[in-house]
Image (tube, rainbow, N blue to C red; front, side, top):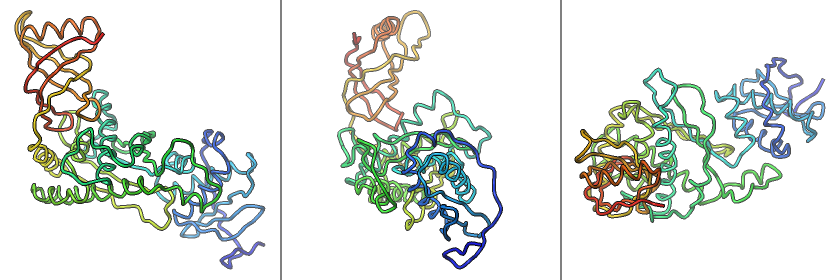
Amino acid sequence: MTTFDDGTSDFPKRRTSVPVDDRLETTDLRRLLVSVPALLERAGWRRVGTKHRSDVWMDPRRENSVFLAQTSSLGGALSSIREAIHQIASTTGQSYLEVAYEAREPWYDHLLIRTQIDSDLSTVLLTQAADKIEALRSLLLSAARAATFKAAVYKAQDQPVSRSYSHDARLAPFGSGSFIFHGLVPITHLDQEPLFQDRASLGSLRDSDHTKATRTLVEALSAASVAAVDGRTNAFEAAIESGVSANLLEALTDLAVDDEDQPAPIEVRLRYTHDIDVADPAAARFDRNGMLAIVRAANTLRSDEPPITARVIGTVTNLKRRSRRGPGEASIRGQTGQLDGVRSFRLALDERAYDSLATIHADHLLADVLCTFRVTGRNRIQVLDIDDIRAVD
């Protein structure tokens, strides 16, 4: 009989079937043998001794045990790592895949955005998916900018100190329940894969700029949720010092819209990967009334922004007019150097301008439109005037 470090001489016999994730076989085992114990400890498990060249870990209730092999040989380590990941998932309520991601790539925190909370749907329209993913990027970019300096509105030229914070973020497979965006938020610069040999070096991965951006994101989401309950404009204005901006509120709006393009309840939660001494922050929840308040606040913070004159280069879509001749409407989905990301510009056109865009569309070319517009939301742009239309060869 083995006596463990905590004075006990036996361990629970309860075992569980473990799913197989072949992707673990392509992961550096030395990395897993460092990251998995860190995840066990964060989940409340404790190492109580060794047996058969394996570390023995027990869960907080001392009902389950995990034997984590100390060897880096493929056969001996993988089965114990799989069981450890499964047990961590059972303890924390995460999916097996979520924990496996944390073990394989410990240089990411996990941002879980639950949308369509009050709907039976667990899908999202393809026409909205691209905008929601762009909104996720905008959410992170807003946090990185707010970590650099506070402002009610950020322009495209306002670059954060940590430019790689949003650039290196990734999208992981979705979890179950409603429709969940699973964002992987980098904790360090990823020009090359970080190196670590032990628990101490794993903990030193966090880069100060990235950490500041993540903490600013958490603070801004918390402040926005409080202001949304209040609902008044001055509550959102006071939250600017906590990182709230029109950009962040617009990103939340675009993540929250339902199939009818109306704001719906949303929940945003951040889970740290391996900061054992730092508790995961509470989820920021926004009900339907709170999201309506966020839409109004974003518009108010944008209201003092002057109109922008710039060239928009993109694809012609949604050509529409009532007859074969005369004025009509069209949209340009494209980019301009004055705004972040891809935007949709709805244009009211006279007959000549409509014919020009119809020809560009028929020839499968990009359009280059010089126009003056006002931003009224993340994907809501009011075009005031059109000065020039040409095709991009």
